[in-house]
Image (cartoon, rainbow, N blue to C red; front, side, top):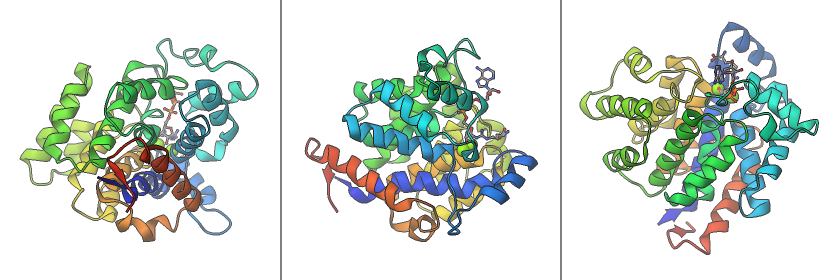
Length: 310
Ligand code: F2R
Ligand code: MG
Ligand code: MG
C-alpha cells in the first residue's frame, strides 16, 4: 500500500532539497546573490524554480485532472520570477509565453533540438505523483509536461527515469528491483552507461569518495550530468538521515539545489515525511505544498487500490 506520508515526503523532500541546496548552487556570484534573496521576510528558506515549477504542475493537473499543455505553459509563465533562479533559456521562453507567444514556437528557438538541461527532470517527481503507475500513461505525461520547456530527448529521458524511480520508491522497491526496472525503461546509450556506473558505485563499493561520484556520474546542470547522480544519492542514503544525504550533495557542489531536490524527493518517496519535519518547517509555503500533495493523493485514491490513507 502507498501511504499518504510518501506523497507528502516526495513533494516536501523536493522543496527541502531545493531550498537547502540553493545557497550552494552555481558559482561565487550566484551564491552571494542567494545570501540576499534566499530568505523570506518571515525568515523562511525560499525555494527556487525547481519547486515553483513543481507546484505549477500539481496545481494545473488538479485543475484539469490531466495535463493541458496550454494551461500549464501559462501557469509556468505566470509564476515566473527572476529571483527564483530559472535557467536563461527557460526564463526567455516563459517571458515569451507571458507576452502572448506560443510555447511551441519558442521551445526550439535557441537550440534546434531544445534544452538539454535538467529543468524538466527537477519537476518530474510530481508527474509520478499524478501518474503513480510506471506504465505508458506515465511516459506520455512526462513527454507532455517536459516538452513545453525541454524538447531535447536527453532532457525528457532524464525526467522519465526520475519519474520511474519515484513510482518504484513509492512501492518500497529494493535498489536492485529499481535498477532492473530502470534498465528496461532506459533507451539511450548515454543513460545506460551512467546507470551502469551508478550500479557499480551503489552495489560494489562501500561508500565511494565524493570525487569519484562527481567523475563517474557528474554534478552539472544538464540532465545527463545530474539525474543519475540524484538517483545514486536517493538510493544510497535511503536508510540514512535526510540531513546526511543533503550534506553529501552540498560537498559534491555544482547543481546542488536540483540534485538535492530530485534525491530528497526519492528519499521522501521511500521514507515518507516523518524524517523531514524540522527541515520542512523552515521552508516557505510548505503548508500549500502539503495541501497539493494531499490533493494529488486523493485524486488517485478512488481509482488505485495501492493508495491507502495512513
Ligand atoms: N539556472 C540555475 N542556476 C544558475 C546557476 C547555474 C550555474 N551557473 C551552474 O552551472 O551550476 N538553476 C536552475 O536552472 C537549472 C534548470 O535549468 P533549465 O530550465 O533546464 O535551463 P535552460 O534555461 O533550459 O538552459 C540553461 C542554459 O543551458 C544551456 N543549454 C541548454 N540546452 C542547450 C543546448 N541544447 N545546447 C547548448 N547549450 C544548452 C544554455 O546556456 C542555456 O541558456 C536548474 O539547475 C535550476 O536550479
Ligand atoms: Mg533551481
Ligand atoms: Mg539547480
